[in-house]
Length: 180
Image 1 (tube, rainbow, N blue to C red):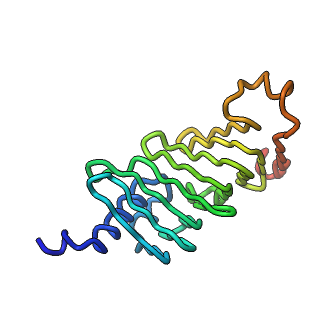
Image 2 (cartoon, one colour):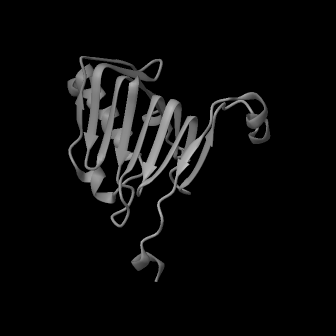
C-alpha cells in the first residue's frame, strides 16, 4: 500500500485519469502519458493538482501546454482542467478521418463531463483550415459546435452595441472531391 501513499505516483495517476477521460482517438488512451513541468503539487483533501513552469502534457495525439495547469478532481474523477500561459495550447485529433483541432488562449478551461473547451483572452480555434478568433470561444467536443463572443457576459445582440472588439472567422471552401 506504500505505493499509493507516494505523492509522485498519485500525480501520475491523476494524469492518467485526466487523459483517459478526454475525447480523442481511441488509441490515444492506450498510449503512454508524459507530463513535464518544473513543479508539481497534489492536494487530495482539496481535490486539486497543480503543475507549473513550462508544463507539457502529451498522450497519443493530445498535446496540452501552458505555464500553469490546474486539475480539479473529486472521488478519483477529473472534473476540470485549467491551463494558463502567455498562450496556453491544446491540440488533439478527435477522429481518424478528421484533422487535428488546435486551440490557443491565455486561459484554456476544459470541463470533462460537459466535454467542453473554453478559450479566454486571445482565443483561437482551428480545425480543417477553418479558423475562429475571439476573446471568448466555447467548443463542445461531443457536438462539434463552436460559440465565439467578444464578451462572455453579453447576449449576442448586445455585442454590436457595446464592443469594438470583433470575432473573426475564416471558413475554407470545400474541396470539389468532398462535395461529391
